[in-house]
Length: 164
Image 1 (cartoon, helix red, strand yellow):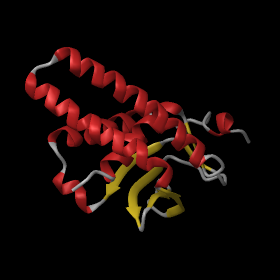
Image 2: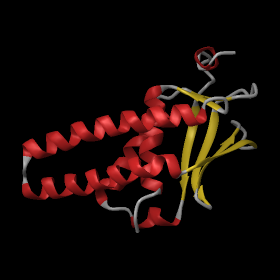
Image 3: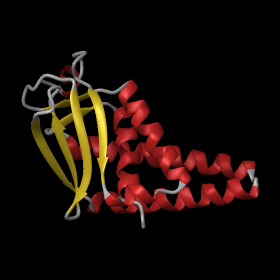
Image 4: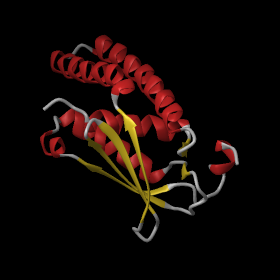
């Protein structure tokens, strides 16, 4: 089964998304807004199918454990189905760039610099695209996701990994 055909089923989706991490209680207003928007967008529309023939919809708990990004996938009944752990190393540069852009965005907002805000937003879109491509590639053969889902998941990875 190809990635595209795996995602064709209306049940190949996430019904709920949770983040697990101590730093989530100390998010800046901008990161909290990014987190809330990404979760809301994911819960509204996504394409997600773990390999192995499980039938969704699925639950997903994202966390960082021992330097790895962990995708804990559960069935619609809440029973654990699959865990996938990815090394964070390939994502670190993108996450660092994301954090710098969030800080620059906050500064530009405080200063009221509209042109700078627009330039930063364009940079964030490009960074999200790059992070999404990396996430799709790293999950290949484990979990099939479409590009918009990968972009939103990348936002959540950055939020989980934020500096405290």
